[in-house]
Image (cartoon, rainbow, N blue to C red; front, side, top):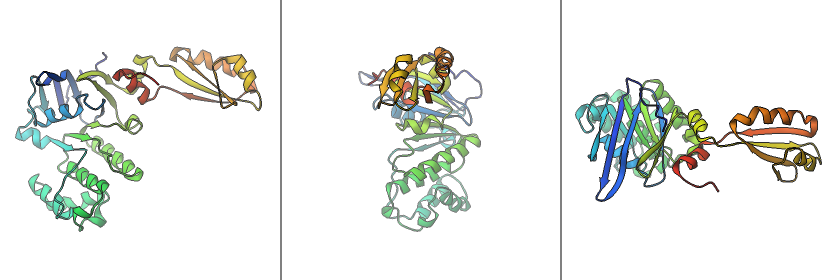
Length: 305
């Protein structure tokens, strides 16, 4: 397996981590590092070990073997707790408190001045609702309050478990803008998500767990090269010439007006040259490289439909 975690200066280090529940092995020899400012997507089926890994990093569970350090400190220590922030998928706050009161309490616990509360609520889009009881808020609003809590104190490592859960499309866009800002300020982010299309363009590296093993850990470009999945070409024929185009290039007819075919990455330029030689028989060409969903299926062992 290609491992892109050998650089120095990592703020989060997970080394040959193993965790079992009885006879069930949940994590097996997992090694992963995050550099300051790096955004890593953590992918895997339900039960693959993502939540268990986050619990180990937070010090909520003890590994059977291996080691974790957060900014040089062990999980659960005062230094590690100060350095790491966590946003669970299902956030829970005191329903009788207002958003302002709840975040003020978190700020006191974190040793932050009260002056940071209002700007953080503004940043996550909750300024207008800050005085309302959290019990009247939507799930998406509570999720944004959780994000404001993560922003307290500028953590060195942030663990985000399905952070876009309950958010509308505009709020999702704002969420990833904030994630980008955190990374730009040096926070390393581990983002567990099933929303593959969202993380594909918004993370620096992809880590995939399968049955407790880390089976992929690299950039999207390197994983694409390693997987060797084909590129899809969709050719739109000139009016009423789809049959002729199909006869020339093969592939599969689509909707009576187009032809779809696949080629390996090293064949792409030769195939495009042959298509260009067909002249105006081809009205348009669409080229789609393997998506993150395709790569996820490949590395997670899921069969293609």
